[in-house]
Length: 116
Image (spheres, rainbow, N blue to C red):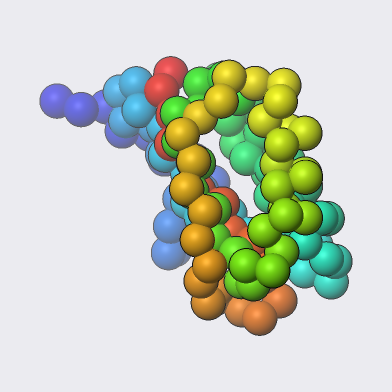
């Protein structure tokens, strides 16, 4: 039987789920929605790092990152922040697409998977 643990759960979703050795986060959006793409990217990556720490993992255990941008014109600016962040860790697989996000205040959403 699979051992599933859910963390930071609300009525709608858990922020991170660990199933045996598999880690999956919810889509993470910035809490600093009054800021630009640089700050929102940093905010989301900080949240991701904290979630990984919460389950006893580190950033090198991330295997895949999915990024949604509300405006693909922000791609290069987002990449400057992301590249500096990922430079310190083993590189996960990554995809990045443009998408209408849940609120116009959100400029970026990131979801990650990994292994314990």
